[in-house]
Amino acid sequence: MSFNPDLCRNESEVESKLIVSYLLPKLGYGIEHWHQEVTLGSIRLDFLSFAAQELPFRLDGDSPLALVMEAKHPRQNLDRHLRKLKRYLTSMNVKYGLLTNAKEIRIYQREENEIELIFKCWGSQVDEKIEEIKALIGRDYLGQNRNSQTTKIMNEEVNENTVESTSETRKSGKEENENQAIAPQSETRKIVSNTPKNQRILVNPEIDSNQINQSRRNPMKVIAVYHNKGGVGKTTTVVNLAAALSKRGYRVLVIDLDSQANTTFATGLIKFNDEQFDDIKDSYIYHVLRYDEHSSIPEVARVSRFNDPEVHVIPSHISLMQAETEFNNLRSSLTSLIKKLKPVEGKYDVVLIDTPPSFNLYAFIPLVSANYLIIPSDLKPFANQGLSNVKNYLHEEINRFRQVMNKPDIEILGVLPCKINPNSRFVQYTLPKQIQTVSQRYELNVMETVIFQREELAKCIDKTRQVGELEIPEPSSIFDYAPDSSSCQEFESLANEVLNKIGLK
Ligand SMILES: Nc1ncnc2c1ncn2[C@@H]1O[C@H](COP(=O)(O)OP(=O)(O)OP(=O)(O)O)[C@@H](O)[C@H]1O
Ligand SMILES: [Mg+2]
Image 1 (cartoon, protein in one colour):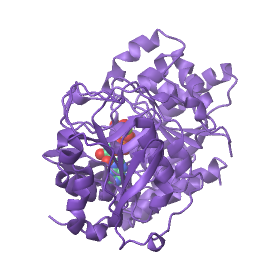
Image 2 (cartoon, helix red, strand yellow):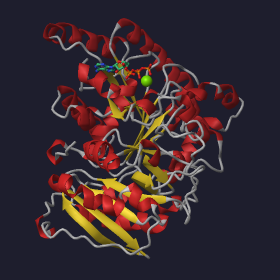
Image 3 (cartoon, helix red, strand yellow):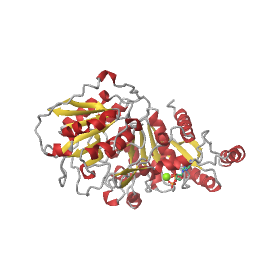
Image 4 (cartoon, helix red, strand yellow):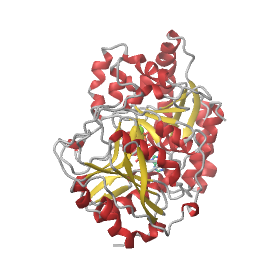
């Protein structure tokens, strides 16, 4: 099998086409020898491979850790990632690091606290160079516990200065985000391959939630997305609005407060096919709400890569449903999210909260915590009738509670028309009447943006990736799935409208 770097158009394709499908098997690493998206303290590794298999895995000086592999977008200049690779290798005592953007492949070796380039070639040369690469970082070779004497193989054909450099600077800086402490979850693995559950990576994480950047440009804006009618597009709105804002450089946190956990799935955090590999249930929104003294947002948030740039997500879990009675007897849970959001006010620009289609506690908590509310609706009769309930609920319960807390009423950004039939006659004749009904009968402002019913919006959530024999869910934001689609334009327009209304533009 040969490799063609031109087929890698984004970071995820560099991971899947070059690393998972080509390099790992060629270098002798079976699916039991590597882990993807491993989070250790503030470090998030794309791939971590082991020369030998050992039960249980311990991450310390004696671990059979072999190699860290980092994949970057094909347009990224690899030089920009050296500092981070050095930090990974030195802090985790890993000897070798492979860094690639598919166009270029580099291998670094750690010597004490420094890293040294020991090999590089173009991606287009990888077929002919694979034996050389194998001799350096192949599993057979690393498994022999060789000493630190390494033959330096420098490929003269690659001239540093000719490497394309088109890295762009984001508004808030991806580098900065990546270096910030995210979530030392007690023992965390983001992807579970088919390794047995007792193979846990035990870490002594460099916990540093104080690293959070407190330099704020604007006060953090918290937006709840809510309607008591189900299936109207709340989750789709949260996920793709988060992606749109993140693409513009805003630092976005998504919180899933629905025990259906659809946002958790749609942001790619549910990678397991078998519930025995469930790595969510030990650290999710329940823990944030339940515990005062620990489970802060940086501890529980996960880096989600359903979109590039990444978005941080506090996941939900089906067990949240059972916890409702416990929370109902625990008055502090009503204000727990408000308290937990305070320390991260400098870390995020926008927080988007997905809610369940109900009037339960998990709707109450976000609505008392948020500054703004978006009400997605398909504008059909049941959804409209539900609007009266929403208004009453806001008036009778939410805003009353907010007044007691000296918080202003929640500001409704509007009813967002979602899943609207794109048929031109419908758009011309029926839609304007529906919009008029909502604004006149229910006295609610209707947002200018319309999110039409489109196949690609439903499809991007169902994307999967084949890893060996496993089919792993790999949902994607609409921006990464169908960048030229009409849905993208609609979510761009929504981002504009929201940013204008919340004063971030
Ligand atoms: N604009 C759209 N075009 C096509 N399909 C859509 C669109 N919006 C949502 N869907 C699909 O409709 C279904 C319901 O959408 P979604 O999950 O976003 O609604 P929800 O309000 O969050 O539902 P729930 O109340 O159950 O949480 C999903 O299968 C989703 O993929
Ligand atoms: Mg939902």
